[in-house]
Image (cartoon, rainbow, N blue to C red):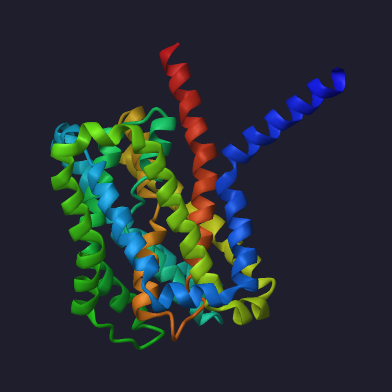
Length: 332
């Protein structure tokens, strides 16, 4: 009887752990699959399956976008301006400087670091973590919307500016803008327009939408690794160095954004939202840029974006709990 109880307790604990950490378990699975079945990645590429999935992901983002909640934040010009300057100007410049200083002999990694640096903030995780931190969710949403729409037009120019110093590139700016509008902006607007008539029907599927977005991230990781397995194997310990570099970079960006929030005198809730969300970057848009314009010449350039994505998820979860504890003390 006791043994049965212990077995049940162990099963429950295992089930709870699998549900809690399924995404990280999924990363291990897709990395293993990418090295052993790279042909699947080629099939995804040939049939544009990942592009279709990304289009659907941004359509779902539009469906969940309740713009009414951010009306009050429109007056907060200083927070919006600071978030755009930090995310789309200061972040890329700091990354470019650190990458050229510490990744001097790794062209793919420098290019990859620049790609993630010019990307907009995350769509979902930044707001989720802001909620966990008991932060200002409307401000978080405002930062998300403004950054993603602005970045569509700034990414090509920013990359062209940064990479010309050591790569002498002349990127097709207009083609990149067109591609981002088609894959990111149009499905988001379509989803937002449709939301008005079906918003009551999509509420039960909110968790499934979140899972779908995380599955897209897993597919991106799989596709990026499967397309360059031999070169990744050759880099060996350099992958560890990339993760250490991203930990350093994200720490610098978090400290910078926390400092900016204090300079512009945001309250505790808005400081949490600003610090967390402005420091995060979206892997999906980074993949669109890499797959469309850099994959053939720089096959390992997606390693830094993947590393930064994982780094921000782990570090910002701990930070969100820290902000949450501060909020509890504030209440008491």
